[in-house]
Amino acid sequence: MTTSTHRTFLTGRRKALAVLASLAAGTAALPGAAFAQAAYPAKPISIVVPFSAGGTTDILARLVGQYLSTELGQPVVIENKAGAGGNIGGQYAAKAAADGYTLFMGTVGTQSINASLYKKMPFDPIKDFAPLTRVANVPNLLVANPQQPFKTVPEMIAYAKANPGKINFGSPGNGASPHLSGELFNAMAKVELTHIPYKGSAPAVTDLLGNQIAIMFDNLPSVIPHVRSGKLRAIAITTAKRSPELPDVPTIAEAGVPGYEAMSWFGLLAPAATPAPVLAKLSGALAKVLANPEVKKKIVDQGGEPVNETPAQFAAFIQSESVKWGKVVKSSGASLD
Image (cartoon, rainbow, N blue to C red; front, side, top):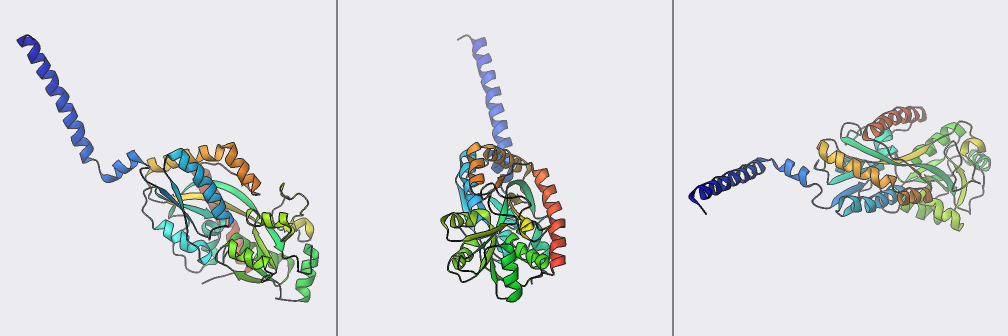
């Protein structure tokens, strides 16, 4: 190698080392949050479910979590934190680190009903969360233990009026959509059904199967297996249209309470301060998951209607539902401490 060539080689090498040193210094200077965003996700992700295992919220969270894990290349773990109509789980998720590793499977109850129903809320359903997407709409089904002496809505109303307060109806918890479905029925049918709240759908269904409570207004996925097996009697659906999964079951409106309509919905959210790049990655991954034909079929098979929307669309929907259910709570007179 000539002297001239050697000098050129050394100069080029010094420049290359200087560039590498500069990049290393710049990377070292990046804050921890930037590192986390660039590598996201680098560890397992949790989805907080504000009700016990076995209910519709849990079923949908596990379904989406399974496919989201594949999309993001990290395990997705379900954390059930039941109680206070979903408020315990909501508070836990709202106060979690805003790093994309804790998500929340919100419901119509936690995001649009509880703020009107509870006098004191441990979190703000609007301000404390960044909406990602609605996952599914789900009808509620009015079901009864087969030992009960009524088979139709008119028969149940007649029995309730003849026996005020003697029909107990269970729900997954105070403020959940099934609870408000029952309160709305009380108001519109002018009857006195007695509400029995549980910490989730599964324990309520267990008592219903044992005839410890007479009826339930529950999310269709939670009770449809028992209806199909004959262990529970389907009386009516709470939505405006009949369910394709139970086409012979009438709506409450057509069965004798005109104008009655109630629906549950479920969607994923993150703590409000989660960085935009992380939210964008989550939103993109969820869009792929919810567009998957297998996922959509499984939601339909559970009696739900698949939904796949943008964060902005989900945020607007939550706002509109808060207004709607706020009016229902006020007119029903329901209130909880």
